Image (cartoon, rainbow, N blue to C red; front, side):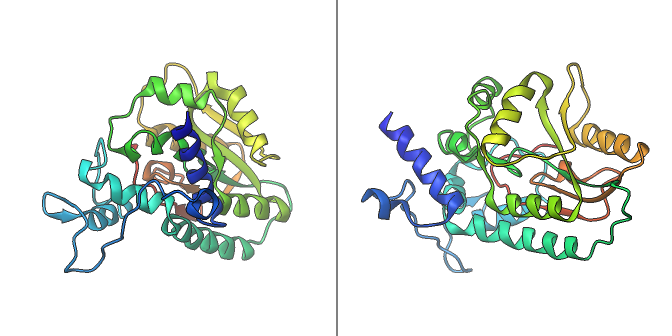
Length: 262
């Protein structure tokens, strides 16, 4: 129980970025690692490839269809997610999205929408992944779904900035998630508890859907477009969130080295 509380505290501090966990607890951080960067210093490797290079390949969509984070990259990914680097990278993405949003000229008919993914985009599941090897362990749907039903996922602060800005200028958020319809009530409660409200639609995967994530999400976006909505923006942590026509006028990819959804 003490370890669980420590993990939650560290994750919360990582997302809030206000101060270090050691300042609050007097204890060392969960991953007391030194980031070893540069061509002459290798933190860890996967088939001879350093973890930072592997992660770049993931984010650039060159490394695909992987099932788990390389075991010897657990420390590197943990350090990245719990340290300031993840927040800085997310801020760069959201700052670009905000700059683009400022240029939007709305038609005044209330038809402009922005599509948001949920997991690792709107809400963070770091409390779960911090206890499961930061993606080095095979995904366990049973344990993850049990975590979802707790409704304890934290807001991603950078995405929240974008979300609130869009509401203020009249762009309607649409939440499009791979979560299933039976998780609707707890997902709504979790979103509201974390300060998200005012969305136009919350679209969850229906029972029996067998296609890929790209097919599912692009199909839902097509329905929006067919209904006369203009998708001015689309943001997610997976390439499958933003690939597949219609993608939207602009797409934005948030970092996520912990898992891959094709």
